Image (tube, rainbow over all chains, first blue to last red; front, side, top):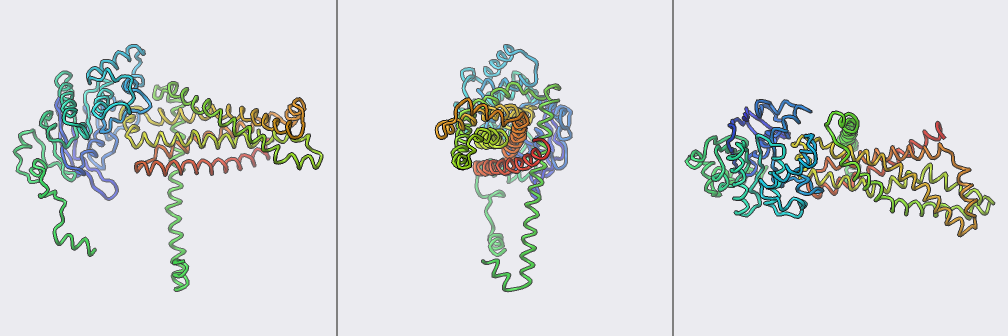
Length: 260
Length: 282
């Protein structure tokens, strides 16, 4: 369904991704894990065509999204939905209007059918009661679910989630996780979830990709993650400060930094 | 003073200073060309999404256009009226005594009519639109950019220029001439209030004198200016909104840069257009 092939991405002199490759099968939920600054969000933005990779390719349903431009890129984008970390709903509209927007723009449906479809999408994420509220009037968890509803508007085959649990309490996090699982089980949705919340990963992941400094250090399932002997993976799992990603300078590094 | 002392200490440093200043100009010029190129690109895209885009189903202007026209036009009417009525009044207050000394107070209505149509109507309306509408365009688009709303539109295969910029430019181009026409009338009315109250000029005489002085080319030159100013203001303010980054500080900076750029560019365009119109049209 999705093939990420040797993707490199640099911003000026900063190399963020160093040859990332993996495959996502139809109907599975893939979690892209990693610490802050590991390249997760950059990889997601490359996968959804917001950033062009320095080299490499990302194919979604057989189409290389990195080579597409203009109408061809727009057509490819209609085959997937994206839920942003902040929800990224248009603040000038109500929740229902936000969900109706892609339908009004890309379909010839009449307003009554669009209204019905919006209700179906809102019902899928348990937000029917908030249809007429504005994004500024609802909670963080509701914003994210509204973001999922909007991403579902055009009935995509693939959904991308950027940090769906960030900033949410445990109950709201579980609710989002249940929603991701429900979409997979009921609609066969392929999901790519960028996260660093281990509890979520344990609840939703069929496949795990772990990134560290722009490199894939783990490509497997939950058992592979739990049983990995890689010290970088172990440190992420245990959350200990001491380890390969300690961010603590050795005495010599400290002196070099001071005297440079 | 530090730089001056360095120059005085060593003759070589003098050339060093010139080199440093010259090199400092290069990035500034690069930035200017970059911004101008970016605006040109934005303009061409906006033209595409206002003309060919709707026919090919790539942009839908109608839903966005009418609320924006209400915001740009109808909601700007009170402030445009206030400014125009005061400008008309001030023109009589400033010139009335001098005109009366020379026995030319009868010319005052014509002077107000000409000033309002050729210059003050379009210029003051543009300044009101910069402050009220241009700044809000930059703020809205900038905050949308910072909140990932623009990226979200792109991922929904909705072109942000077609959806956000093209209707804003169209709304400005349609409504600014209407506001300027309104400013003509209100400005002349403002002049009449002062002329009637201070110099006892009758209403009928004021109206007749105003229209004797005016020609259609005066009215049209002001409308042309309004179209050019509204295009420039909407383009500049949308460009600085879409290129906002760096959180609230960056957004605040871009709003300031946008307003200042709009003011400078409008005054420059006004000077250029006035020179052209006076030589070839009026």
